[in-house]
Amino acid sequence: LDSVAAVPAAAGGDTLVAEVAAKDTKQAELEKEEEEEDDSMRILCLHGYRQTGSSFRQKTGAFRKLVKKTTNTFRTIRYDFIDAPHLVDSPSAADVDLSGVSNNSGLLCLTGGSAGTERAWWFSKPTGGFNASEQSDWEHGLEESLKLVVAQLRKHAYDGLMGFSQGAAMAYIVLRHLENEEPSLLPKFAILFAPFKSPCSGHNKYYDKRVDTPCMVVSGEVDKVIPREMTEALLPTFGQLSFFGHPAGHIVPAKAEHRTKYLSFINLFDKRPPR
Image (tube, rainbow, N blue to C red):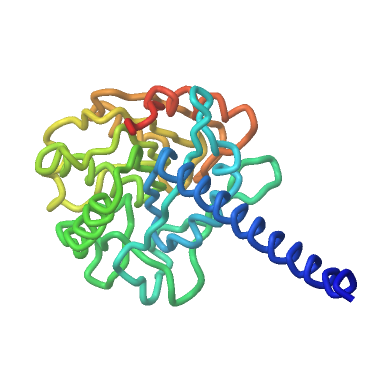
């Protein structure tokens, strides 16, 4: 009887041991993930006009897969996406369009967010719209956006800043602000896709000196939204510039052959944080 009774007890003991082992394994996995996250390279990403952080994350999936680890120390690259604070209520035909050209060649097409959720870093028209190619003496929203991005930079020690179109223009302004006012928050580098000088005259103060943070500027040869010449006009204001021109339009290029270009720049700043 004793031996018969011992069988279920042993089985129950095995089950308990298995459960404990599973919990230990799960805990070890969580601790490993936390360790990898703490050791990761972190990049803050700013979406374009009429996009959102969520839509930018989705549309940059190919890029993030292409550039997911450094090749010096094989650190994971973590991309954080935030929303601009201003809703675009009713986009007009005169607004910047982010439709791009859709294809399956690894050249990423960037479109806006869903209706009612599209956001902006600032507006250049009293009607609430924005056009990068039209000079304006009116602006609204930049200061709120600047405060939001700086607040996010205070939450984590970001290695890099990445922006697309109006988000790239915003990133440039953030760098100028930080270099002048809060250098302790400066990221080590920035990657700017289709950046341009703000068309708002009230923002001219951000272009009176060069940006000294190392930047990679990416521009499309046939970009119809932010033509190459608009980006080129900004190039002399960079103190440390790596320029990547590609043959496509208003996109984040994400072909396999682009990986080396991106990582050769990012690897310059790939140093593990001290423990």
